[in-house]
Amino acid sequence: LFFATLLFGRELSNDSLQSSNGIDGNGDRDESNRQSTILLGFVSICLLSGFAQVLQSSYEVSIERDWIVAMSENDGQLLESNNVLLNQIHLICIICGPSIAVLLHSHSDGWSLVCVSLIKIISLILMNALIKRTYSMIPSLQNENEQQSSTSVDENCLDDNSASSNMNNASSISSTWGCVEDIRVYIFQKELWAGVALAFLYCNVMTFGGLLMAYLNSCGLTWEVIGLCQGASNFAGLLGTCIFALLQRFLNDVRATALCGICWQFMLLSVSMFGVLMKNPWFIIVGVIPSRIGLWIYAIASTQLFQQTVPEKERGKVGGVQTSLNSLFQTIPLILGMIYSDVDDYWKVLVTSYLSNGTAVLMVLFGVYLPCRKSNLSYSTVD
Image 1 (cartoon, rainbow, N blue to C red):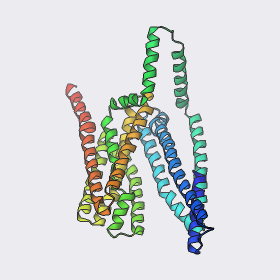
Image 2 (cartoon, rainbow, N blue to C red):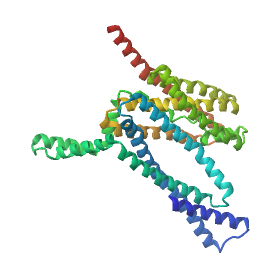
Image 3 (cartoon, rainbow, N blue to C red):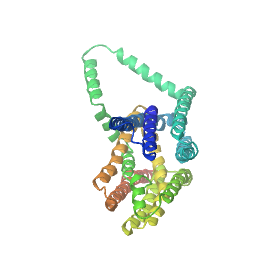
Image 4 (cartoon, helix red, strand yellow):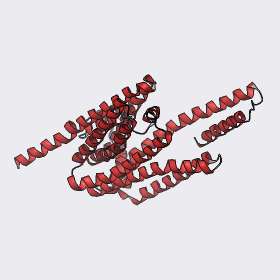
């Protein structure tokens, strides 16, 4: 990906330089070769970026769904602190990364791409070193690996009889239909609706991504103002991680905190929806920026619910299905954006994302919070 990006940037620079100097190149053949190289670099970047994103998702599942729980050692308060700290570091990097890239681009005279790529490579090397160091410092992670190894050895020592043959056939079928088995495990989780609601939130386009930014620009806002608002929304997400910790101290209930977060987000997105209907960009911004607080509160709360309830052997399966479900719902607004490609029709996509947020609120209320509330009331009545 690094070399494909360098190739793409070099060819684009040469193309723009020749265009500015009025040079047509050495003929149609050179021009065709240059365009082919640019296309090859662009396709390589897209394919390799997708593959890198898959690897990044698997890394995030391992860290967020398993390692954090092992580091917390069954301490709920420590688990909460680790989740908040992890998301705060993530958001700080999101805020600082683009700022560093813009600063390098304005002072490096064409070497910004190389500098950013080198920073990325150094970060990856440092990340892998820290992961290895963390693994060596947490005995529970090593014990988990030893338990899995001993389990596989015990399975290989089973007698070759009809019962073991049936088990082997069943295991081969389950490995063949591994995705179906993972989905089945996910469906039978206690906090199923919390995960499905989180996936529905990925349909939300009322955030500072490509569709909303294009819509705001069509409403008359400059790109500078939109960029400032995007930075403010990231800071709002950072604030949301701090508010999550405060709500947990006050409510002492992850489900109630999740409900508060998603209701806060939906309430403020209702203000943004009013701005969409009135075609007022400032109403949209006033609703979108603080809504990020509720989004991050619910994201941390839903993750912690799964961390506390999913058995150790099922964390990878449940986390993988959840990540796939999030990606699936994230593609829905992109497909709608291609269908309604005219900026004047973007409001239809925004309405769809608003309805998905409303559906997520109902899922959390009736599928996560109220069932637990009723069970607690029944227990108190019996006592």
